[in-house]
Image 1 (cartoon, helix red, strand yellow):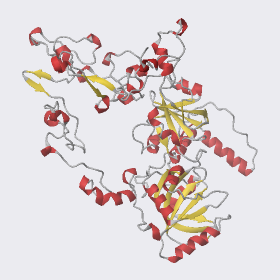
Image 2 (image 1 turned 90 degrees about the horizontal axis):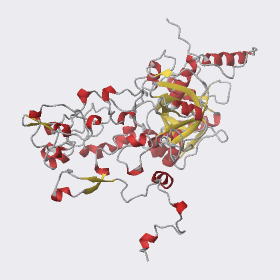
Image 3 (image 1 turned 180 degrees about the vertical axis):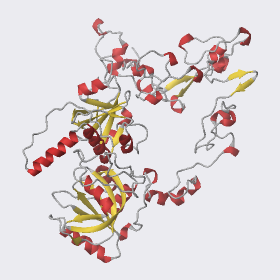
Image 4 (image 1 turned 60 degrees about the vertical axis):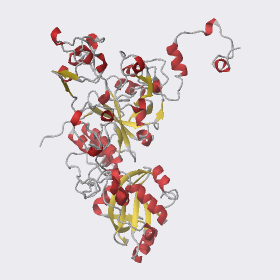
Length: 595
């Protein structure tokens, strides 16, 4: 009888000839690779030429290897990697982490995705310097020919890939990169093992006497001075209320939330909030004005107002009430004006706000446009807002206005005749593609992102403004409209060359439709650079509502669609007989008049 642990691996039904297959590749695609206790095992031995105890393989985990997933997997790029989660290489399309092209400067492949460096910048192959390299002309390292007299009498292949070369009896070290703020804050593991390839230029401490305190970001007004570990406790409270790493800004003016009053109001448009930041005022209905005045006349309480925009599902900032509400003729119910001073502008998702303040009641069209809250709820919401990144509520797209240098000290708002392209309230998003995948994106009406951007894409809702950035040609296309929220593998075979693929290389996907076909924007466009000035790490990623509206207006304006829409709306308002806009208009770029 077979052992129990072997019986568990056999199928219940007897095997037949038709059931026996040797196509392990299809089997792996259908059933996956069995999970292990450690998905990243690999063999780490000192040298293939070692003898005795040194020749015994040492199994360890790649999790402790600093090189883990710092280079894109060559096999994954062709959908041929069989390791899955156990692969030590990166399964993500990242142009900055591509492996080196084996052809170097002599590469003749068009749009080759691999990195290319000159022969002068390539490291010398240690194996070839010892007399022989098994990779021959396809080696990624430089092969330098030497005279026979300069070659060692006995080859030493135990140098491996350390790339340490001996010249005239002196061992030259690898050059270390430039120091940063983490210089000498921890011990060097190579030095602790006996030898460091960087020598005196190493960024890590060679002994306890070289250790420095771990730095952290200094609070505003500290003139760049380092704040070390022992000062963390004394500054943590101030750092929390000043936004910390989320973006700084003005500190909260309310130091005793239990002695303050809090309200949240609902605005009709984002434009109204941008105008409020420059004018320092807001309008409410009479019943809400009476409640505000009653609290304001008390004189002992500060009043903080939070702002949200209809259907945006985001809280856009907070301000302090500076005057009581008084009647002003406006021609509508919102005729009571009071003064405010804005202290923070942000884009906090409602879901995040409700997690921080579960008792928060949001103003709606069916209830009331101004809602009060308890001091405890107001304090929780205030903390969440102050830990959200700063954003601008308005981005200029006409090119006539320079971007603000300080969001909270130089508020910007649109002029009365500044009409933007209609966009849905809320954030937008820029997806990425290259010259090979762009036709597939447009043909399928499907855009994709790597798995690592799943959290960033969670803000996408049906109706959001979407744009597509071609990383090969450095062009931004639009305007698209999201038809679905971001989901995993809407089409598992999309962007893959493997017809049997069960997951896409870009599994975070949405379906889109063309909202307005416009000529693309060049990446070097100055106005586009001003709109995305706060972005770091490339063009692909989430956009604030102000950025999405400005980019959409910039695209619509350069092809004449924005002017066409404005003239049509003005004609309808005047009662003129105007012709409706065409259903489809071939995109063309209109040159701006020269001054």
